[in-house]
Image 1 (cartoon, rainbow, N blue to C red):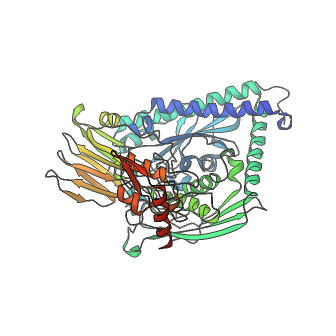
Image 2 (cartoon, rainbow, N blue to C red):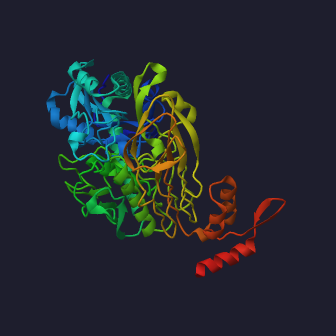
Image 3 (cartoon, rainbow, N blue to C red):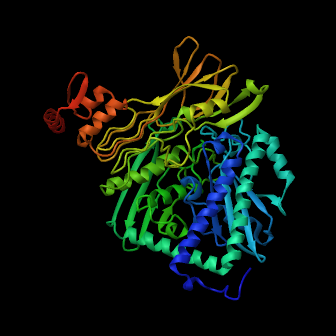
Amino acid sequence: MLTANDTDTSEELDLFTMVVLRRRFEAIIREMVNALFKSGRSGVLNTAMDFSCSLTDADFRSVSVALGLPVHVGAIELIPMAVKEKFGEAIRPGDCFVNNSAYHGNTHCGDFTLCVPVFMDDELVFYCIARAHFGDMGFPTPTTYGPDCRDVYQEGLKLPCLRIQRDYQDVTEVTDICRANIRSPEQFYGDYLACLAAVRTGEKRLKELCGKYGRDVVLGFLRKYQDYAETMCVEAIRKLPASSISRTVRYDSMLADYLDGIPLTAKLTIEPDAGEIHVDLTDNVDNLPLGINMSESTVLATCRMNVLGQLGSDIPRCAGSFKRVKVKMREGSAIGKPKFPAATSSATTHLCHLLGSHIQALFAELIDGTGSAYGTIGLPGSSSVVSGDDFRYDGRRFVNQVIMGYWGGPALARHDGWLTYGSVSSQGILWQSSVEVVEQQQPILVEALSIREDGGGAGRHQGAPGAYCVFASRDNPVTFSLGAAARQFPPLGVRGGEAGAATQVSMRRKDGSEIELPSTGDVVIQPGEALVSHGPGGGGYGSPLERDPARVLRDYREGWISRSRLEETYGVVLTGQDGIDTVDAPATAARRKEMGAA
């Protein structure tokens, strides 16, 4: 209940109340996350946690994105902005809106996003948002990634910011359309209810918070919190040197017009006096007749989160700090705002992965001791969307994305790459599935899951290797929808670091022979056959000859690198007795000196 003191109290808030309210908001988001995680039907939600929850105020300022995937939450404000633009004064308590359209502020069509307006005394004060990756959205084939899609009309069902609930009840016309167009309607509806549980939980808790502290106290806190985040960001930027760098990298060729690869150019400018960092993406190719075009949401999120990642973990990731990252893009560009009817179904992966890695690498080139090398690009074969008929349940249709062996983290300035990093879109937040759970959820057999020897890029700090994974079909055929990349252009190293290993995907036939598969598209694995995936490794940071020989020996003993890489790339000489290898320090120093002079 509001009190007589519910005016502008932002100046009266003490530090203790600020801390308490900050933690309360984080707790609300955490409860939203738990509601979705515990009730999600599909494995990509209840196992991999490929979803995010967030809050904004009525002015679309994001409150906290601490528990979300970077690509999901870095521009989450575009969702309530689309709701307000489309429905305006017609927004009512009890409404819930659904959006999976990249042309209405969403990331890509695979991310099913719900947005609930929160009212206090008939005034709109917040929006609660849940964004979840669904396994199927009515594509021509069972998937929600379509790197080969030519235009938006090949990307399945579109929900361009629609009201899906009115007065807390489903608008059945909308849910019926979804059920009719999605291959696993029961799974869809269960996942929808999980998302709904998240946003309604957030709505309830926000009302309780405002009832306890007073609406104006809570809103006053948010104003001060945004100012605090912006101030922290400005102070961090002012510690950096004024500088600018522009570089072009390349993505695997997917078109005859780009046999030498698809170029991606970014210009990074640090302006410490202004307290701003600018990312200019205007010098990029036009929209491609492919599904790898980025969306406005993924461009903003990728730039914001990867820039802020270089400024310190103590800076809140919210609208206040986002203001200091200026992103310039153009409409109709593959690395920008798409122009209808460009396809964007892989906007959260592929070019998105490359852009995020590129921004971190630009920092590394500008300022030694910052940034990182390039990490995993695309989805390894072991993280494909799988579908088919499950013989264990009377041929019931199944569709799910498996997140397994999604490794290959980039080396950083101060440490090796994070093995289960995934990519810049997730940065370790996605949960990697276990062998037992994958085999339980799908009628497939995981024959192998292991570190890919010599997979990580060599360097002073070594990139994390990719995974070697083998999936075998059991009694029924299984379709794998591939979305791999980094075959022609593997993840690069920085500051003398070497590139990680390139992607490989193949099919093992019944006779044991293997045939190479294309990076993208559908492949049907029959009983007795298997999909063999070699995931890409992250690039290295710094010269391999600067790596601590003891760490090189440890990597060799653990099976991460071969004897030949130890000797020929890292210049380490071993000696030993009784089968126990040790580093010969004088010989290693001499060999490294010789290799460095070559």
